[in-house]
Image 1 (cartoon, helix red, strand yellow):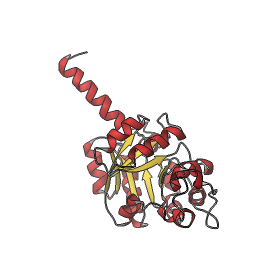
Image 2 (cartoon, rainbow, N blue to C red):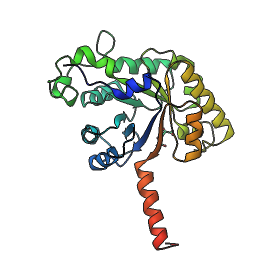
Image 3 (cartoon, rainbow, N blue to C red):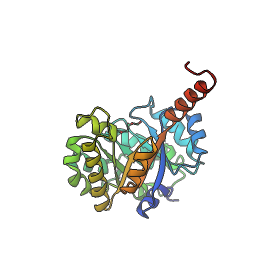
Length: 257
Ligand SMILES: O=C(O)C(=O)C[C@H](O)[C@@H](O)CO
């Protein structure tokens, strides 16, 4: 038996535009609920949400029967974290703060078994192999892993061509919050200089035959990024949906509260 087909990767390779949402509530029950909405992909955020490997695993399990492909964002791009997330059954990883081609190459190697990489062999103990039921896992796993790198700094943008030339990188996600802050605009991704940088980066990523991705939480930038060629686009966050609707509901019935 082979590793499960990564439909997110297949659809990106086919040129589809995939609409996603961020999961930052760090909870399996909330992830299961979000999985019923029908997003193409959902990010289990290990960078800014209070997740650990156990809560990431819980959310992967909660999404297993949904139509939404789980994307696990690690706190940082460490080889040992990549190994643990993959063994827990993640097949698509989003790695923040990638600034160089060396880092990108190291991450590709972290995702692959020797001789093509350095991933340790032990998934037989874990979810990834359905606890040893996926007998051909080692032979088939590499091809089903989708590696998405976040470029979100001035240094990363300067290295974008080299990062894009790294074989094994499937997509590059531009982080508007981090990028705008690193450019000196304190989270204002709408600043014209930031917008120009994002537009150029999305075009470069597409021209290099990689999938461009981004997050926006309001309609105008979301539509703009889709028009500019972004193909995996997160359009909101569970936290934003819950907090926004809770506040709107209270304002309706208790204005000024
Ligand atoms: O820089 C960004 O933008 C991101 O990396 C996404 C963020 O972490 C965050 O805005 C998620 O809500």
